Amino acid sequence: MTDKLTKELLSDAFGYGFKVILEDKFSSPYTPAAVNPFNKTIILNSNWHNKRQLPFQLAHEMGHLLNNDGQSSCLYFSPSKYGIEGNANRTAIELLLPFYLENKEIEHVSSVKFRESLGMDQYLEDMVQEEMIKYYQSFY
Image 1 (spheres, one colour):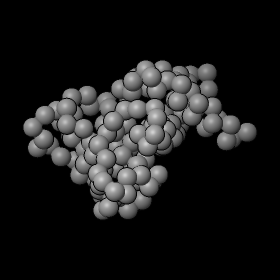
Image 2 (cartoon, helix red, strand yellow):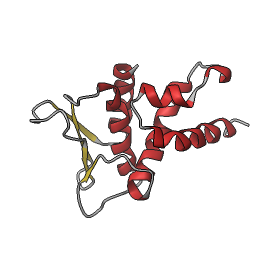
Image 3 (cartoon, rainbow, N blue to C red):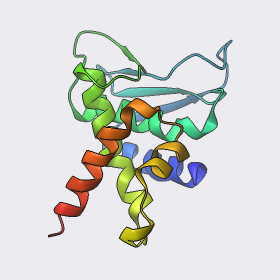
Image 4 (cartoon, rainbow, N blue to C red):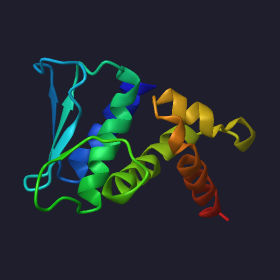
């Protein structure tokens, strides 16, 4: 799921006019993704230690740009529920949910499976559930 999802997100990012650099020259597999809001450039560490997290990181950084965050400095990936990081996480979940829910019967939907498939931390569970509810409510 992650390779296909990453390709879909890259296509979306380019559609928004964002530039994405998949960098493999970082000295550490723990160097997080970053975004430069001035030139709308996202940099992902393609050697990230947990490949499952790459789509979430990309969507998170896209979230910063879509939310017009950080007009004064570069932003680095930081998992959080609050402030601009929390808002970027929420936007990332909104971007990712349609891919997960596509062609899936509601009885087979699991916020835990969604979150775990993307290497998202447990503390984001309530945010994932809220966004799933909003997603389904938008159809009724």
